[in-house]
Length: 113
Length: 113
Image (cartoon, rainbow over all chains, first blue to last red; front, side, top):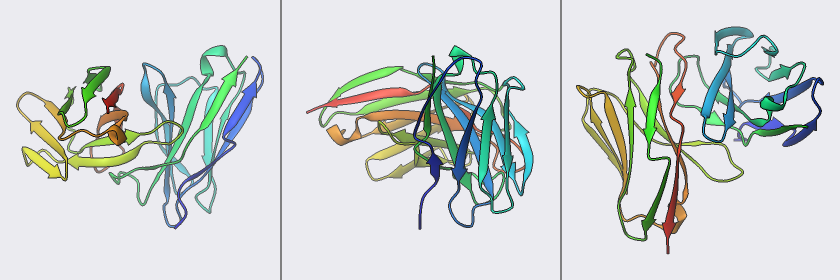
């Protein structure tokens, strides 16, 4: 069974640009959540999607948005990039929303110059 | 009420020694406390988890100790090995509804050969 796939693995952008990150969950998993990982801050919850609906949202500005498609694949978008957005963005899937066990992808490393 | 405080930030242990990482939470609604292990270049992976109805859970060399009254839980790695060198994250959530995961800030463990 394939794991959680995130693309691309690395991205370099400049301030003011926008970026879209993609996540394909494990087959049969319907919940996808996104996290931002930075040194010293750990993993900060961005949002969770289940059956194409956003179920929960973290404390991030509106520049961060996401969506989920009918096949459970998810995308995350960051507009008007800032230097502080440089981080590892992790996607995690689980069978159901509220399901405890999360399966993480390897992440997308975003660098904003 | 949503924080999970993790310590220490980094830990160096000799091979064969015991590694201990501590976490404290605030929200008494949490009922699921997992530990995730992350190797460089990879996403976190579930290592072991506990629910508050038991005070200890052991899986191989890994043990979680849970103190409900103190709102604390800890990970013990017995007979630590160089292959255990990784970053460890504690987390807390409620296993139903739309609660989000709250992660600690991580502990970077290095086991010396």
